[in-house]
Image (cartoon, rainbow, N blue to C red; front, side, top):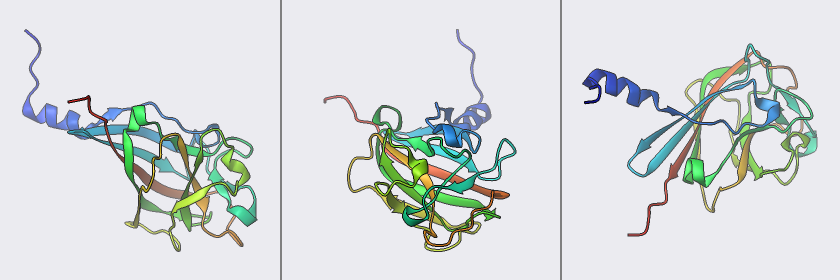
Length: 190
């Protein structure tokens, strides 16, 4: 007979969620913390922790001012936060960006952009599409969302400065966020 779990222990384990494999670009490896996933029926909720002022290496803005600076840790490296994969995240229908700590020193107007997988987003590629626009400096408790209008499978999400013309280029001294993906697992034929 297997080991029984008490109700409190089971609840605690359920709250933690399941750690999932990160698909962060090399340019952001030090600013992306854990990636966990919870399941509610067929819904898959993926939470990605982002710390712009990470002790492992703070983020800065890189790229071309004209097309929007990509926020990352290393210049010349791919700056994605997550590559959406239907096999891992389900069919993603919504993306939510939540500010838990005000960004310090660097640009506080932070947008979420997406681009096809395999494209180096550090260059500030004009092919990147802004899906969540902060519309100003982010502060504690600010939450922005995007409802998908097409499949996000194989799309790379990245942080981008909302000030294309005159952003603050300094290294971040703080700024903590949760990027949350809401997906649905495709069920078997009935």
